[in-house]
Image 1: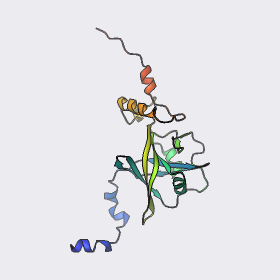
Image 2: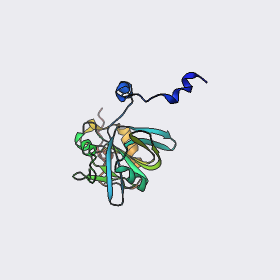
Image 3: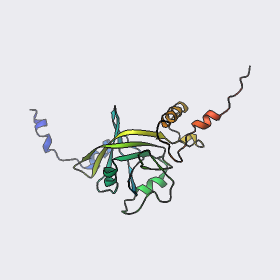
Image 4: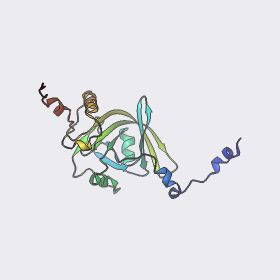
Length: 203
């Protein structure tokens, strides 16, 4: 056996500050992980969400240990990953707080995924997932792996600069959304695109 491989299990973990310049190159984003069970709902801001399977589509997320969201995910067997506008600090800040007993959704408009997970109306998109696996790591975070059952892109027709896809993608998402149970207050500009009158051809 290679001596390096034989001694690998004896390696001590690196200090976060020593490897941060390389770790921070791994892509991350502005997301909120939400779930709900019975009359209780919760959410937390997360940075790490990643696809981990294409067939079936699966994603995994890292959640701080001890958060009130964890028992809700395990009881409901579902969670939603909501993408935020990176400039929307108001919504993100509400879910950065980890005060027990405080509902971060109070004061904001809330939609529901088909599985019942809460979604802030200011979210750009969401993935509705069935819990497939929970991994308890030897660290300060735990992993949740989910099977994606529904996905919706939420677009603001009055602010096209915030749209993350082109009109062709919008039409495909809208067609897929028709197959899923309807959501409250979630609108796409697809209908507006259909109602736009065609310009007369000029010779």
